[in-house]
Length: 362
Image (cartoon, rainbow, N blue to C red; front, side, top):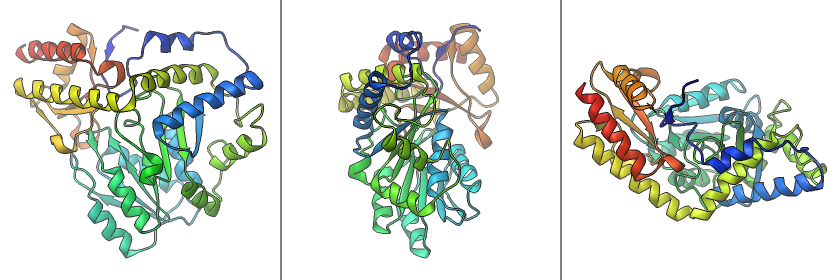
């Protein structure tokens, strides 16, 4: 396959040392040495999620992590409120409906953030077991106000489940301090490693709801993962053959994040996002999402009418830059730029803006 520079919303470009970990000789997924290494890696991930709760590294995509979270927390009669302002909010509802018919969707306009006041009003109407929201709605690049939503949910004693697949390691997210019950992410975006691992963090409030639900399944049942951590934790701290080299690569990615420092990293992504948005406007392109609700790892852009596919093809074929279109009703109207981790640099964004200027003039 032809090699392009990835500027899509994931997977992202990763550092050479992260890729090198994927090519190391295989080791056993059990035993004292592996168990110590795995637990240390989980501890590093906990520092990024900012939690003292349990963290599981589950082989699979981010959607596997969402399936584990929703399936474990929702009994067959569980009541869940899905906050939806884009394609991945729709995905949350789709997964939830596979476990319970009691799924209510609270929609918000595309390109706008979820309104905590409206969520509070909905929670006053009835009893929900859980609320689920996407932190960074990757289809549009909107950043939803998870901290405020968590405060609303705490006030109504409702579990908050957060899809942080495109935000963890890019945006501030303090799971314990904010009161998030279950947080789901994945290896291939802000955590700077290849696809292959879902990251699921569970706080005490999350376990309380999971215990009440007694959900179905085995592989993606978080109670099973908890059981193996407790019973086999001294030599085999997971119920499956672990994807050992994915874990090793994730560890290198997370070590890079912690070496930079979370606050410095957040500031870098904010600065790069502001620079990109200014540059787009200078070229006559308008970001789809307002500055005040924009994420800092994905930027959606209103493309030239009728020319989005042509523009993306020019960037790909003439400049070797792979950007993304978008999904649902915005398809063909909006394109997306991923700028996470090693891709969040002035040099990378300057190169993109120069290439855009050329392609827009063709």
